[in-house]
Image 1: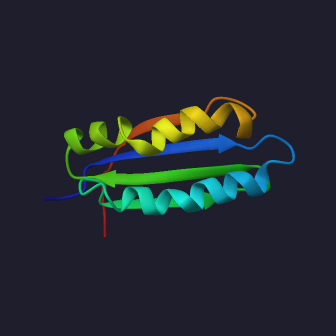
Image 2: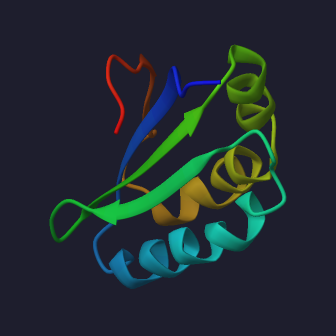
Length: 98
């Protein structure tokens, strides 16, 4: 199967919480290792206060399983303490993959 589905989430750290957001995202790798339908998972930094997560999936069911999984739950729990605003989460359709 080909990777056809993705998620892009951008988050903005509260002032002084940048390192905590970094650590939170870094710990997410261990969580998604237990998600067989999450084919790729990236956590990244855009600038001093903006971070992101990019995930890919072969099926819509895999994407939905991830959306109902541990990382979004943890983000919902930790977000009010760490983030300046709600995450900008976008469901994307992959056009080409190498």
